[in-house]
Amino acid sequence: MKDRTNGLFEPDALLPAQFYALLRGSSAIAGEKRLMLAVLEDALDCYRKYALAREGQGLQMFRDVDVWISSRDRRWFYSYENICDTLEINPDYLRGGLVKWRESVASGQPEARAAAG
Image 1 (cartoon, rainbow, N blue to C red):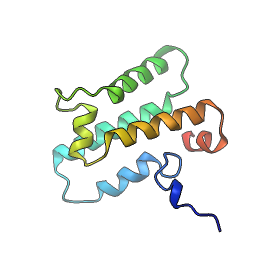
Image 2: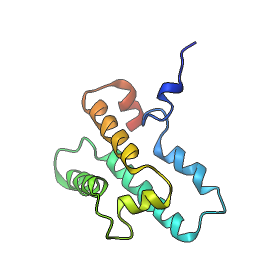
Image 3: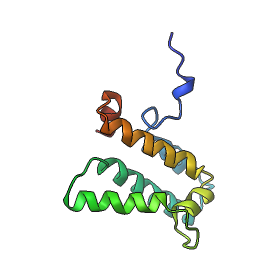
Image 4: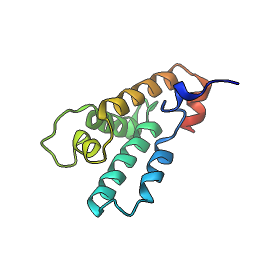
């Protein structure tokens, strides 16, 4: 039997929407945290949806979300870093997973393309 523990938290093993759906059920999350979670989830959806865009609005959407995720600026309350910290998510781990996922999609790996669809 194949050992799946090594790939448990790789982006194609668990979709962001699946992970955040678990957090949504908790009544302990305050309204502000729910809003932060929605902002992050929307950003991840845009990142995945437009990762391969080459022109037009899709490319601009990807660039915007990529700049936001790449930024380490914490001056804005709803910055990527602050949202991750508030939600107790490691921003570098998530950022690195997104980069790996995009590279695998760009290289045409079938598992990554299936996860993107």
